Amino acid sequence: METQRDPELWKMAKARAAFKSHLYVYLFVNAGLWALWAFGAFWDRGTRYPWPIWTTFGWGIGLVSHYFGAYTYSEKRMVEREYQKLLNKQ
Image: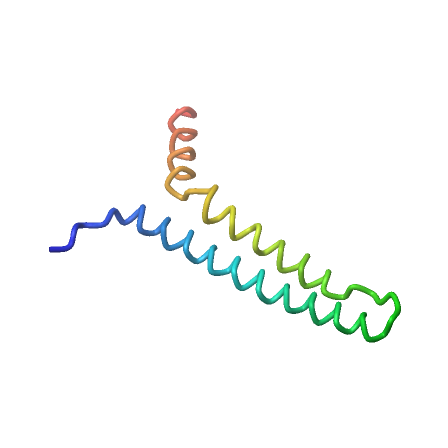
């Protein structure tokens, strides 16, 4: 017999699992891009422009946004806060 899941906790768990998956892909892909850049710089024997910085930085902004959505901002808490503000105005 399966126990009932709390829908709010289930939603939070799914958001956090999705963030962790996003983080792992981010780390794997960016490690590959930096390795590719380093390998190319090794063969050129010169200082080359570190082009992976743009993907790392740009994608990192999205990752930070995903983190806040999964761990910091709860829709339930935000709705409760707005409701309390409306009650206080009356």
